[in-house]
Image 1 (cartoon, protein in one colour):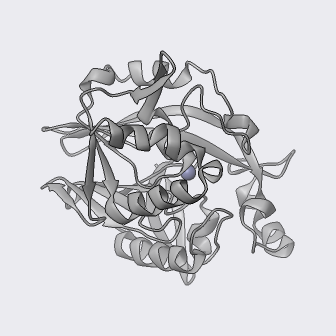
Image 2 (image 1 turned 30 degrees about the vertical axis):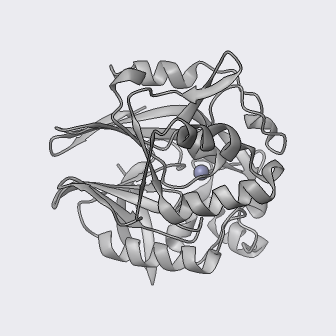
Image 3 (image 1 turned 90 degrees about the vertical axis):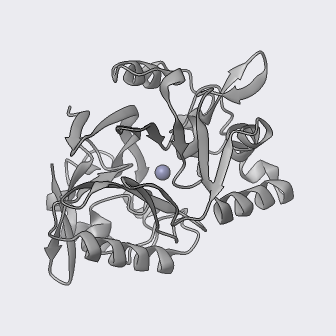
Length: 291
Ligand SMILES: [Zn+2]
């Protein structure tokens, strides 16, 4: 399994927490018809859809970038000890896979300068914090945590109104704010000449992707702008927890169009390993060419 590669002078590591069949495809994509699924089975199975269960195979992972200036962790997976009553496979996880995968990069929790959360869903914020004597403390003690302003505002308000609907905000986002480790930015923020946020709203209110490197030697860390190569062939296909599926489809059309048939490496959050590849033209849409 390829977990390390380079674009220009940036080393990119995948830090994997889980890889498994999770959700039935027709449940995950609520507007996907049985007919369209059947039409696409031959290429989706067995790589992207488990033939036994018809569940979507997903990887849960972070991307760790070693740039000349900073070590940047993008998204922080599910985490341990977190109550997730509506997601049995993530509830009160006790796994050492994430720590082992992080250790394999040669970096430790003290080496991370920035943690970037593309959005504030449960599988992208979990390792922001860890349990320490009954309190949630930042897992990466020296890091600044980069949140999009409107995304943070949206979830902070939602947590205030209905905390039971988003326990991950309570245990993995608000403790970062309480510890004053957050950096709140616009979703088109430029960190430096090699790291830039690209707005990709729709899946959540103020979702961002991250473009790293220099023209000709760059990578787009997508976050959940896309969940499956099926959404590259059918960009308008929404998924079950989208905030606004129409807007998410527009973000996919715009970003896939921008990087289609270029050398830009697409680094997806959830495609099965190797998770990375290039965007190519397919009919009136796009396709994924794995690395
Ligand atoms: Zn996700």
